[in-house]
Length: 508
Length: 124
Image 1 (spheres, each protein chain N blue to C red):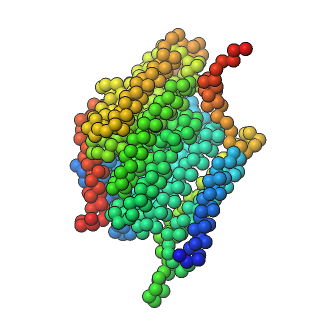
Image 2: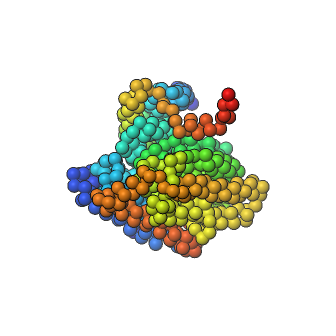
Image 3: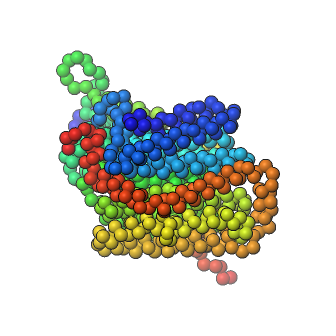
C-alpha cells in the first residue's frame, strides 16, 4: 500500500523522461504517455478504494519517520481529487492525441507529452504532499510545466499572456516560500501534521497572520477576487487542451491547498468572516465579468473565477456539512470546466475562432456538439438533475444550517450568481448556436468531414463525449459521492486522524 | 539580537520592498529583476530562521551549538527553482522584445475593447 502512494508522483516523471527519448516515434510516445497516465489513474482508484472509509494512508519515504523524512499522505479528500484529476488528465490526453492525429494543432506533440506528464506529477505530488516544503515543490513542478505549456505554439498574444501568468505565479511562489520560512521559524518543522500540533503553542496573533498569508498565497493561485486579474488574461489564450487542463486542475489544486492549510494548520483560528466576504466578491465580480465577454474562452474563464467563490463559501461555513459541499463542488467543477473548454476547442475547429460576434448556427453545423455543450453548461448553471445542482444544494443547505446574516448574504449572492451564469450561457447559446450558419462554418464542416482530418476528429469528439459522460456519472453517483464527501469532510474538520496517521499514536 | 541577525533583518526588509517596487514597473527587464530580488529576500528570510547562522552545520564531536541544515537545504532547493524560472522569464522577455521592439508589458486589446463598450456614444 505504501508503494502505491509514490506511483502518482513518480511514474509520470519516469514517463516524461521516456517520452522525451521517444520523440522521434510519435505512436510509441503516445502509447507510453497514455500508459503512464493510466497507471496513475489505476493507483488513484486503488488509493480511493482504500481511503473511502476515512482511513488516512501514509508513506514515509526512505523509512525516515515523520517529522524527519518526506511524508506522503492520502486522506479521503486527496484520494478523491487524485482519482478525478487522473481521469480528466487521461481524457484530455486522448483529446490531444486526436488533435495531433488530425493535424489540426500547431503545438509540437513531441514536446507536449513530456511536459504534460511533468504537470501530472506536480498535480499529484501537491495532492499527496505531507509537508509544507513538498507542497511547495509540487506546486513548483506543476507551475514550471504550466509556464512551458502556456507558450505552446507561441504567438504574440500567448507570449504576452505567459509573461503575466509566469510573473504572477512566481510572486505567489515567493510569498509561499516566505510563509514556509515564517512557519519554520515559529515551529521548527515543515511536516504538516507536526506543524498542526506545534502551532497550538504559538501566539494566536502570529497564527492569524500566517493563516492570512497562506490564504493570499493560495488565493493568488486559485484566482480569488481581488487576486484574479491574471486568470482571464492568460488561460483563454493558450491552446484548447491546455486551457482545459489549467481551468480544471490548477485552480483546484490551489483550492485544495487552501482547504488543507485552513483546516489542518489553522483550524483553531476562525477566519470564516474573511472567507465569506471573499466568496461573495469572487462570485459576483467573476460572473459580471463573464456577462460582457464576447470570446467564449474568456467568458468561461470569468465563470471559472466566479465559481471558485462557491468553494470558498463552503469553506467559510466552517462546518462538516459545508466542507462536504465544497468537496462535491470541487469534483463537479473539475469535470465541467474541462468539458466546456474541450467543447469550445471543437467549436474553434468549425468556426476558426471563438468570438461570439461572428458565429451563428452551431446547432445546424454539428448537432452533436450542441448536445456536448448544452449538458455541461446546464450543469455549470446548476440546473437539476445535473451535478452542479447537487453541489449547490449541498452548499446552500449547509449555509442555511449555519445561519447568520453574512451567510445569508453569501447564499443570496450564490443564487444570483447561478442565475447570471444561466444568462451568460444563454448568450453563448443564442448567439453562437442558433440561427443560420455562416457560410465559412459550413465550408469548414465539409473540409473537416472529408479526408485526412476525420479519424483524429473522431478521437477528439469521443474524448469530449467521454468527459460529458463522466459529468453525467458524477450526477448519477451523487449518493455515494456525498457519503464519501461527508467522510472526507469529517476527517478534515477533525484533524486528529490525519495527525495520528502521520506521527503515530498518542501524538496529540 | 546579535549584530549579524539585525543586519540580515534589515537586508530582508530592503530586498522585499525594492523587489515589489520593481515588480510593479512596466518594463519587463525591471520585472525580471524584481523577481530575482524577491527570490533573494525569500531565501534570506529562510536563513534567518536559524539562530546559529554563523556556525557551520557540522557535528564536531564536541558539545556546543551548530547551525540548522534544514533552512540551508530548503534555500538551496528554492535557489535552483528561482534560477531555472528566471532563465525562462528572460527568454520570454526576449520574445516580447522580438515581437514588439520594446520590453514593456503589452496591453490587452480585448480588455480595452470591452472597456470601451461602457463609454457613452459620442453624440456629435
